[in-house]
Length: 110
View: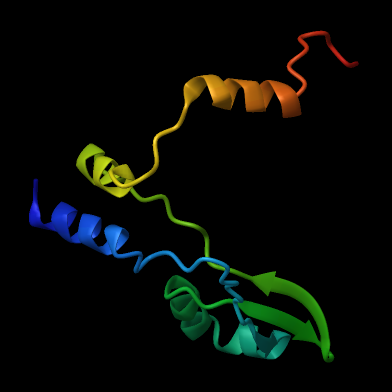
């Protein structure tokens, strides 16, 4: 296994990436329509860095600029390392739970 995978596994095992019960709040900075027009280059750089903006016109919010979620490739080794410490799942119990809570009737509803 590569060093990166080992570091990832260590971080996951130590729970550094998990905050049970935590709520993440993204704060958007308000910018005016004029700022958007005049400072579009800088705003685009900040979007690229992950910042979000609420655009206002005459003090009234009219839109939101948020960065796109980027898809990241995860190697098979990294995926295995991430789930190495995960609890085992009883497949039979999982199917019973799904059957109890999800209607799997194939009859069309429309």
